[in-house]
Length: 490
Image 1 (tube, one colour):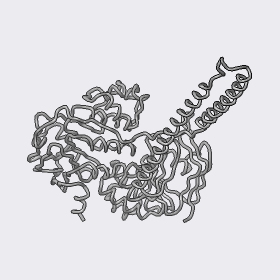
Image 2 (cartoon, rainbow, N blue to C red):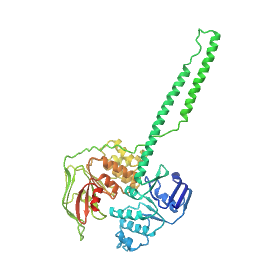
Image 3 (cartoon, rainbow, N blue to C red):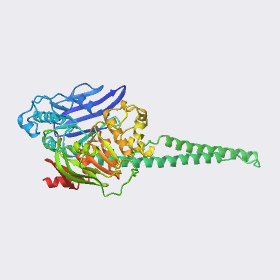
Image 4 (cartoon, helix red, strand yellow):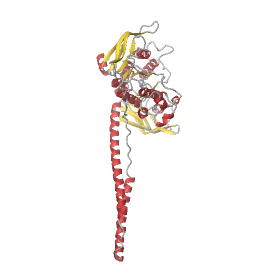
């Protein structure tokens, strides 16, 4: 394996605080690396430094090959050949004055893959892509020899990567294997660290008790009784001083051992406890029914027509189909109870949309989270903590939050509300991988009914128990998870 890139003693600061550091980072031919970390940890900054966009504050970077860098924010590149465009179904889009985010992403991917450079950097390459396009991308990335990818798409990280680089508490660490392997290694490390902490705590308590007993014994050694003669008293006094000296020396030795004990720290628990007991539980077998449901834009063929389906109480349903097939349109029809949509009267909707309309900019983060909450403040704080917020953030106004932070707040607000039917339209956009996993936990614990639109295959696989398939103008229900549906497609 040839060395393609090496960074040594690297560090970078932001607003006078160190953003990240590492002693050594190496990329060899054949490495397919996933770069992960919380939002704001410096993933994109690290890519720019390794690529050479700007230098690090400290350290050196050696680039031993050409690098092609895919980023969402670059202008559209010189068009690749027609074959690549045809693979991504954008052959007719390249000459249009404007293209959608998904189409622009596909054109950039086609250009990046076609360049055939020894090393490819990619920053959130799956953004705006629907599931079929992601699957095509996976096939192309598997053919690439060496990659460094920033992504919160766990399915991609599992299918593509043989190494994970994580930015954790400002330290850059490398792990062999894919994302699932990384999680297993972290779980083992955390288990070992927690065991070491328990042993440290036990030994600390033992030494503290031993020091206390040693001092008590030293202080309990008494001077000579008054009935002793002078010679006996002098002899006893010498023995007492000798014994006290030994006892105090023993206590000092124990104190030194206590002070020199290597401090171990408890591992923060990432498994969060949520109490999502519904305030308005429903006994109905189904919460929503669609009959003869149709939608079409003027002078265009219907996105879907004469659709019939039900949403059972307590079910978790994913809407599945390509971009533009009508998934968000169906969500809007449910929200507005369009003709053909029948909701149980007691249904209370919890709606997540990309416009984040449930967030009030002038209110603080915590006030927004509690605004419609029926949960105790402790539960709301647990949700906010799981999304990466600290108590310091509680007093920030929502207008001061980043886009990703507002998404997290919006989700927490919805889960804290009295909603018993959640409509979630692409909730993982702009979330870091830790927040996606917290959202997954929240959905797993949520006892109500969920309708989910997401291109995050890992989330859909773990949460959805049924699918509504958008298939060329028809809506079909699949009772089962995503994996069982994909088997029927092969």
